[in-house]
Picture 1 (tube, rainbow, N blue to C red):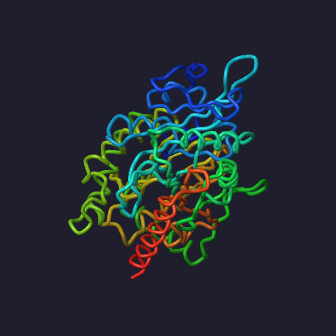
Picture 2: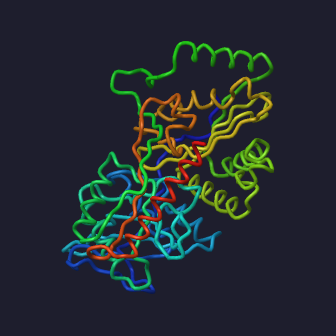
Picture 3: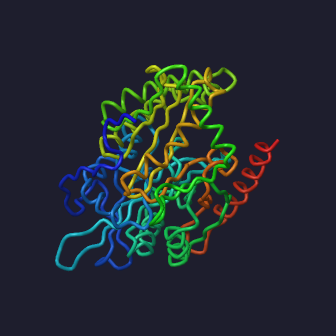
Length: 408
């Protein structure tokens, strides 16, 4: 296997200071000596690289879609209003530590109701909406964030918190924080998606759930392709390499079913606004050591490509495409089969989140573990509001109808 860089390399650290005054003053929690919440813009967040990296190291659950590079892409190439909630813990001796980050955009609910809401994740190319919280102060940080939203007259009081993991510490903190603030949280939809955990101590390789029949089939596919030419698995990690490989990925994706007229808009290349965001985000993440691309090449031609992201000790599947001329030889399956070994090679990744919608997707058929995901509507108004209750009702009905449409 060729490798041009290390998927698990360290993150660059820039100098950062305690929170500085912004255009809008920070919003303080009820105890101003402890936690300050700053509603910031993306450039401010980008300037806090060192503080952010320290938070990721001690966070309850990492989320690559809360990375500064994602905020930077939203700010640079989209017109969607982005609010970066930064929770700081002030120290008695001076200074402050970043204990929470949540990227929220102002938009409408998925049902199209003509009301403003806050929402995470940011758009259709980001697949996890959970905030990044200090594991020791998760409830405090999130409670202060919700309080800041409730007190800020410029922000909507409803938050569509989508794709939130419900099997970890962040969900427990979310429920506790809403209760502490006297708000209301309603589950709109529950799903499960594939994940792949690293080998446990004593295992020499990740446990593979594939049957012997399926494993033999993959070996035949690989042998058949190798007989047709020079078959290589190539990794790209350096920003300039990722940029070039990403353009190749866009072409490969658009040449397949996602790029056909009947699927217009599904291929990223065919949607200029999404393309600009995706390219800026992926290259920015690569600069921060948080993105890489895998390619399966036959005589130099990419017949399958996979884009993977990482934050902390978690990797995230983002997008995959393959050459349909080779569909019978399963190049996408071969690349996906090799991915866990590649990602877990250095021992600094604990799990891979597939980022697929649910367990009906392809990876759920070959990856053993599941990650429970849910969408929530949070009303930060004490006791809840009529608007919040009506929005939750409409959203539930809309999602149920959408689910039925997908199954028919």
